[in-house]
Length: 252
Image: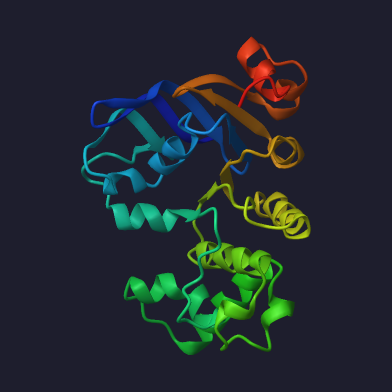
């Protein structure tokens, strides 16, 4: 079953066309990697799924993006509600520096004015931290600020903050590019585990990472979708010569 369906998506920054007639579907509870050289439109396309590009003056979308059959750019869609359902984790870990680990996890609830009993908050914090394999590492320092955590732990904390709302889709924009190899491996293992419950879309420049953990990969070039297929098939027998050239390091 398809979770996300993009149909004839064109996207403009003012007069510049960043995305050109992209149509593709993403299945539920899968990891999909967006690959391609810098500036090809990967992050722009990713950010359309939770309307992050709405914040950019002069940005304009043509076409349709549906999640669970609902056009998320319809005027009836509340952006705040959409972003609860479609969480995002950025390239560099960005826990709120003035908040404790505990308060970081439930920050979304407080920012949205959602009041809960302490027991409910405690349960959400523990479950979210357990889901990202961080609970055992921080359970004794929950009310300390997250500054002392390593980069990999901070990124897992950001993931915990994202899934505390129980979104259905998680967007990841190069989530491990600022991390060391051991932290990267932990995040990758975590994403494979999380796809049992979430649809995960990840922009990555790391070809071996895409090969290791994604079910499908989409290769983009100059704002176009060049190829979208099962990752193993694309990486072994790509159908487009541009995909093969990129995967073998001839450009990018």
